[in-house]
Image (cartoon, rainbow, N blue to C red; front, side):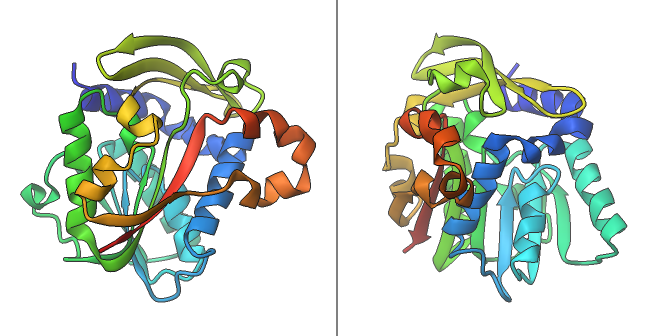
Length: 259
């Protein structure tokens, strides 16, 4: 089974509980770092493409930051349904659209009515579902194709799947097992959502978690920076709690600009 098939099956099983991740420490710092990366948190009038946007956690944040629209593309119909239901419950129509597709494949093949270009493209955790370089290249090809010149890319990636803090679970997530594969690792991720944890298999290649800029640059991205963990408000508010995470983080938020 391919890593994308595994992702689709996994998210079908955990869709209803996944939004609880936003309340974990890892989910909180992730959201705050994304807000900083977005400039900070001002998207007034902009159009956003959210690749792998799932249940819409970050898409809704973008609307709250003033985005004119967000298009979510995700492989899981169950996650997209949850996102759609939440939007309906909020009484918003047309702000967020939902499209099912494998973001490692050319999106043009799906004939979805996507915009030709976007002001912002997000890719949060999709790289952690790629066990082959060719899969990553397909993801980055979509990023480069749909981001307008001068547009902003924001993405979350693994920082260190072997992190001690990813083993302890102190920050709301932990690994059940980690095994090496060609060019990287596979691991079992457990998110401490309530009322019950969410678990699924992840694949991550060293070219991503090692911090290489190669694939970003191949997609036409420049000014590639990893957001400072100290810029998150939760770290400023409680540096003692976050001290161990700062020494050995297991996630990173990357910001870049399209040439």
